[in-house]
Length: 120
Image (cartoon, rainbow, N blue to C red; front, side, top):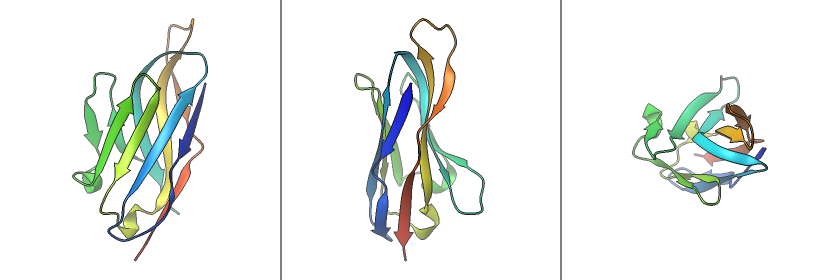
């Protein structure tokens, strides 16, 4: 199973970006999917998560600016980021709790990260 993230780039303050993450491989089912970020010199932090039933959770500073969504048929998760601020600059990683076909328990999988840079 692999997660492939894309959509990062350079944007000015107040701009927007949409990140995408595709899960591929022998996927039985996907429970929660999430986006994390890691800024230089800081620990990785949870940005947003979406459960299999559609419930969402957001880190406080991104509420009302970011929106996480899933395409269940395509095994994809998206992060729409609006009103971007310089403090949003980080490498963004997608994460999924995924059960492989024929396996009873789920494992944590990570994408390779995509860099988001917000200039002031």
